[in-house]
Image (cartoon, rainbow, N blue to C red):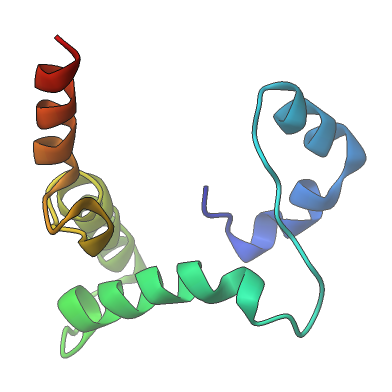
Length: 102
């Protein structure tokens, strides 16, 4: 789960951590200066920047937020092919998994 920097204080709170771990989440936050903890998120950000944001002039912050959200929820997460899934989209991968499980 990606967290916005503004929400980092909440993420560090003991009560919030207990809530998440109680529901099966695995929390990961090393410390300042550890580049490896952030590598996966940086890869996602790089992809979003190169596939969507680069050379785009947004009229407002709201437009940028809306288009980035649409890209993530409407394309990147469900439809974009991922190397970790054998270059299938998550929708294709889940469909095959459901067929094999049946």
